[in-house]
Length: 567
Ligand code: AMP
Image (cartoon, rainbow, N blue to C red; front, top):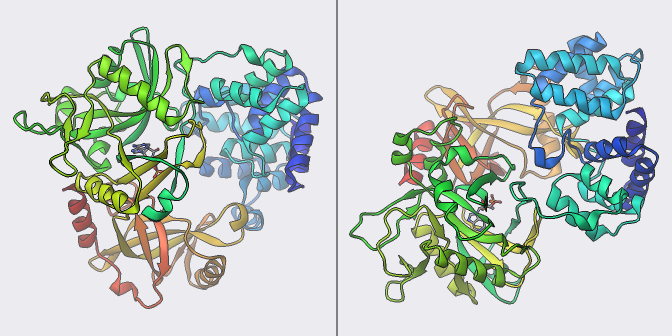
């Protein structure tokens, strides 16, 4: 672990990517295969390989407490050190005693496994304490960083892939492909070492990375990136990759969690597909319209789906109350072949064929009624669980605007605009998929507490918790990080430091005087904040120097927005 930590220090010490990969490659080669494989995972900022979906579940507060215990430092000393670094790992590196015997990376991963398996903070804490007592200071620094899931040495997994290729004389594309398919950079490394990268086969039931979209500000911008655009509604649900093979079905979320159990109505339908496939799509709460109407129904906002989440068992009543549908919009594997490299146009075509062969209802726009959707075969489908997401075409901003209006009229968030010539790029946020959406509303909120930022925001107060007025008091509704310029953050930091009411170490409670305008995508009911609501993806639009806290928005306004969104 000492050698790994030293390599990390050197990696952090240079901004040049080539140098970083050279350091990683040289380090990996100097280790045994087992150590190198574990190190590759750690260097990717993870405790475990991606596909395992195992997390340590040790929070910052627990780590903070144990660093304090092991070092014997007072809260004030620790807070002062934290202020200087803004990173708990760096704090550990400074305060952990030099008496530890040192650790081997393989041993560290074993202890991480015990930690992941241990239930509750007390049991996990015992293992963290043991690890930190055994480690030398520099080791502790990187142990804590790995445990918090953020190395902050400017090393992305893609650079570890490059280093692996370099270390073992493989091509980068071979390494990338194997890592994408396996979701395990350590395993990939072992195969590279054995010269067996080309033998990697698609592993069904191991989630692949999801292709992501970049935001577009306007219809014009959205159409400026590529020749021909396919357009779909942007549904507000949960992204879901469905693996279906031999009658078995597993559904994975964007965090690669297996969420099959949460949607018991879907596997049965998906298992009926005529061949082994991996589908990409969105699970949404779905409102089925009356049988006599030929309309297919529509997706409901995320807040409706939310009632079904986070439950171990889904009751029949819940399934009746909040029905869901899987809107399939892409196909990653079919006909025994991985389709990622095929253009969207071909994947979509195969998806259409596959779904129509298996009688999955396909929606289309009726030529007569602008924007209205019907099922293609004219059948009345009142209970479709898997639906092909309808695809439209647009070649001008005007057409795109019309589709946008129609999508919003159907209650969807906006549009997804996809380059029909593009390959499926797992885990990448590129310009081949664009999202066009309009913000729901903005709220004027009051900052109630602030925290120091991370990375380049180490020494400044950049994370703001904010609330709205509820009678005489303020109730919190969200937390936002971004949106302000560095100069504004510096100005705010100075103000907050001068107006701190209570210093809680990590967090400062401040005088509730600063009003911010925040935009957000959605509003949810939530226990996280004492208002009972939470904002989804809040962003600071501007500081409202012109407003007093007494003029900020109220909880009544929040309820209004919530109700309007529900309808
Ligand atoms: P965002 O979460 O705002 O970055 O938007 C990307 C997300 O939109 C994806 O991860 C999907 O969950 C969701 N989405 C909704 N409809 C579609 C669609 N038709 N195609 C792709 N993604 C979609």
